[in-house]
Length: 102
Image 1 (spheres, rainbow, N blue to C red):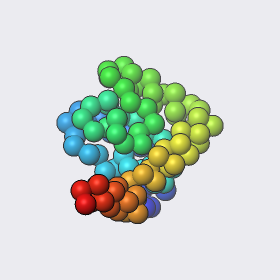
Image 2 (cartoon, rainbow, N blue to C red; image 1 turned 135 degrees about the horizontal axis):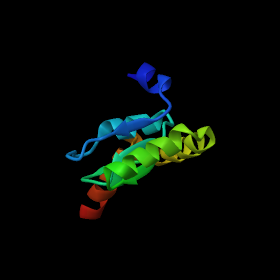
Image 3 (spheres, rainbow, N blue to C red; image 1 turned 90 degrees about the vertical axis):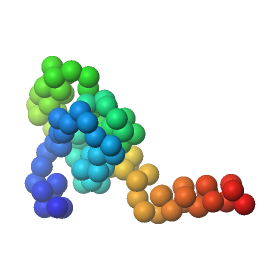
């Protein structure tokens, strides 16, 4: 999968029925800016642009397509946010829950 992410400029998902959308997180690891609907767990992911309507979705894609500097900026931000989804971060969060129970 890394080759697919590395070949892209933007990750977009038009899904409106998702649990935790792992490709949104994966694309952030590769510093791709992303566009997704603000549904389900999408707001919890490192998605760059969360939208409500089809028009907003297209506007966000057009904005990112025409602005390489913005893609770079949002991709870097997404990559930083994706760090909270690493195995180490998940371990620390789980360990903290366990420590609070003892």
